[in-house]
Amino acid sequence: MRLFLDTANIDHIRHGVRLGIISGVTTNPTLISREGKISYKELIQEICALVPGPVSTEVLAQEAKSMIDEAREISRWAENVVVKIPATIAGVEATSVLSQEKIKVNFTLCFSLNQALLGAIAGATYVSPFVGRLDDIGHNGIELVKEIVEVFSNYNFPAQVIAASLRHARHCIEAAKAGAPIATVPYEVLMQMIRHPLTDLGISHFLADWKRVMG
Ligand code: E4P
Image (cartoon, rainbow, N blue to C red; front, top):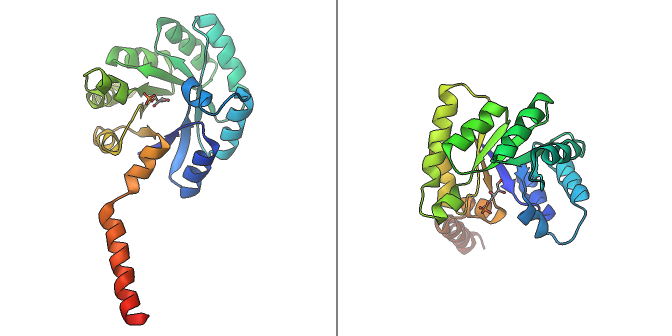
C-alpha cells in the first residue's frame, strides 16, 4: 500500500517526504485555495520538485475540449504531474483522449462503481473514490472502495484505486483492509495514524525509571 498526502501545503509536504512514507500528493481547487492567492502553476511545480512520485492537480474546465486543453497545459508543468479529471461524461471523453496521449489522469470525484468503471475503461491511471463524502450522506464509502478494488482485479484493469476523502485514522485502517493500493490522507490524519497514548506513556515511564536509577 502506498500513502499520498492530500494537501497543497508546502510545509506539510516537506515533513511527509522527510518521514520517507509519502510517495505522492493529491490536491484539489479547495486545497490550493487554502494556500492563499498564489500562482497555481508555480505552487504545483514546487510540490512536484519536492515529491518523489505523482502529484495530482485538477482541471477547472467543465467541457471536454477545454478540459483536454487545460490538461495538456498542466501536463507540461512537471514530469510527475497527474491531471485530475472529474467523473462526468465530459470527463470520460477527456480521459479517453488524454490517456491516448499518455497523459496521466486521476479520475476524481468518483462516487459509484459505474463511474469508476468508465474511468478505468477510458484509460485513467488512477481512480479516486471519495470515502468521507459518501459517509457524509449516509452511504458507505469503504464498501465502494472494496467493490472497485475487486472489480478492477477481476478484469486486470491497470487503473490504480486511490482511497480519497479519508477523514480520520479509522478510514485509513478500513481502506487498507479493503485492499486499496493507495490512500491519500490529509496531514492531520497522517499524524493521527502514528499517535498512541500508550506509546507516549510508555516513553515517559521508561525515561522516569532510567532517571531514578542513572540520575
Ligand atoms: C482527493 O483527491 C481529494 O482531494 C480529497 O481526498 C477530498 O477530500 P474531502 O472530501 O475531505 O474534501
